Length: 244
Ligand code: ADP
Ligand code: MG
Image (tube, rainbow, N blue to C red; front, side, top):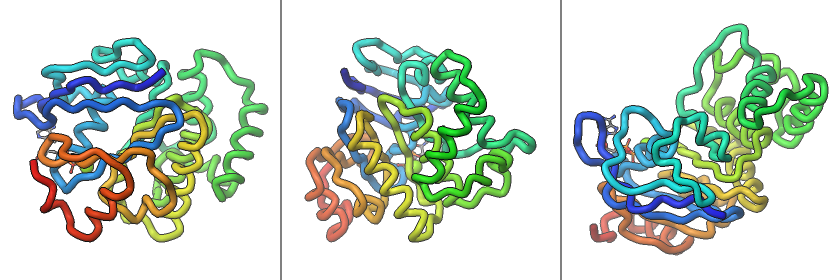
């Protein structure tokens, strides 16, 4: 059982190459962190795993539990147990978060859940994430702060309980409290059965968790693989001493 990124080379639709021969194996329960400077290709990696139409796979494969999903659509990937964070949550006035999550859950599991039972489970998850129950009645994405978007993501993770989660943490202006909620949420996830690929350029988030693997991405290539010592190196020296 694993999510395997095998020698992936990715270019944008205009044919410029962004990622060059990227490989990673993520097993359930592992927490992998990818760090890199702006423009390194981190979001391109997340988007490619999501099957985003703006990116072309020039070479390599994406395999989930022995099944090749390189050509699979985003919803087929989700059904195989892959969760991808939405960087830009759609704003849909009139669609409540509770309803949205139930529809997403039913789509991924292929079953129709009982609305009342599902609501109970949601309320329980809200408690664990320090969210008011009223959050579930708000319209999806409308007027969300950076912290609320992240909390929605944690709620989605809790509800969908994916086998593998890819989280692209851009600098979305999280305050200290939101950072802690998100950091602890991710840490909790990674100690369960889920394999997590956390893409981030801030080490601040990592104080709440113990990554099992750290990978450094510069200019579309992995230049180092290791553990927390790489995060410390980046914090003290930046990216200049990683040779490409
Ligand atoms: P990061 O998330 O590490 O900051 P990105 O993956 O967003 O980096 O971008 C890596 C490089 O690829 C940048 O130079 C960016 O301009 C370019 N890039 C990303 N997406 C596209 C796209 N759809 N079309 C053209 N260039 C892109
Ligand atoms: Mg990015």
